[in-house]
Amino acid sequence: AQSVSQHNHHVILSEAASLELGCNYSYGGTVNLFWYVQYPGQHLQLLLKYFSGDPLVKGIKGFEAEFIKSKFSFNLRKPSVQWSDTAEYFCAVNTHGNNRLAFGKGNQVVVIP
Amino acid sequence: EAQVTQNPRYLITVTGKKLTVTCSQNMNHEYMSWYRQDPGLGLRQIYYSMNVEVTDKGDVPEGYKVSRKEKRNFPLILESPSPNQTSLYFCASSSSEGINEQYFGPGTRLTVT
Image (cartoon, rainbow over all chains, first blue to last red; front, top):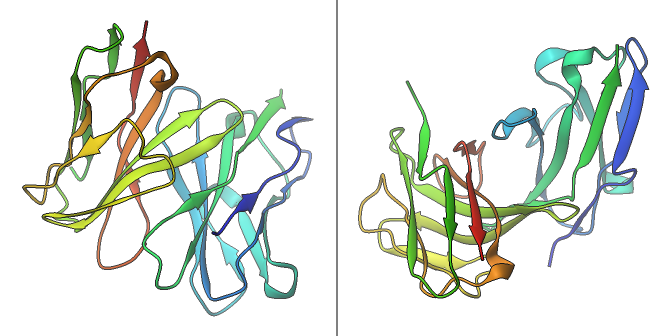
């Protein structure tokens, strides 16, 4: 079964700092990859996704992620965070031919003004 | 407005009292799914449905039932709720076959005493 690992569950940083959240998955086949964000008290929203093509994906609100197939990774980055980026971030993976979506345990990010 | 709605948003109930959480989407999506979110565990898929009358188990289906009699609705049924089903529940939908961007509902916070 596919599994998704996210490390450093709690991240605290100051505004303007750079953010990188790691995501590793266990499946070796073709995958679809997602990052979702959950702002306090809200439902999940899609930040960005990768299906194929350019492994560097740009999403909303200045976020980007890079798919590195050899490392089974899909790390999320933002060069300069804002207080409004305080949220929980989830990586999710779907393997081709499988109708299920596996989520990581999430990263709770707190940005201090 | 494209959206996924869930009702109720908050529910406190007692052990053993059957309950249903409704989920409805207005985007004509084929795929619908239920997740539960627990601290430190991220989102775990309970059940999903590829289309009307087609449902399948996710990672944590025990204690839950679903039905898909209409394309827009995907209710989650707890026949005999127990305290370990206290959680935050999200319904989601997406278009086309397989997994695409999922649209999430606002969540239902369930407490079973």
